[in-house]
Image (cartoon, rainbow, N blue to C red; front, top):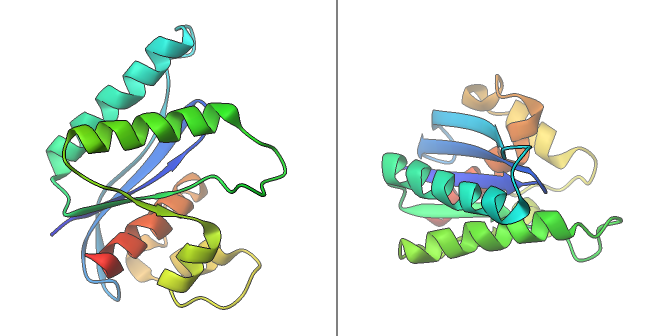
Length: 150
């Protein structure tokens, strides 16, 4: 069954949908979607919710995961936290409980030891994921974690 991984920013999100197995994933679709720039913040967040619901309805995943903002991040990004909150609410409204994954949890899920460039190394090491743009790497890592937890 398909899975989805998300990675949010303050005004956009990346999404990667995978099927197959953790060792042999197949990319179903991937996107990087920017919120409408000339809208109010509440309307941007409503747009995020609608896009998430549309993607989940189309893919029909068994598991959804997202790369969570770190509490120890150098820049505390309120905008990203808002988007992640909307993502979680939209998924809950569809009866899905997402896997919230920090960098440490992703490394554990993916059996990855090194610190430097962990996401790039994981994504570039799997043939089906090698062509993904860099702005989708953390979403792909979250999707791989979802496959391992499916």
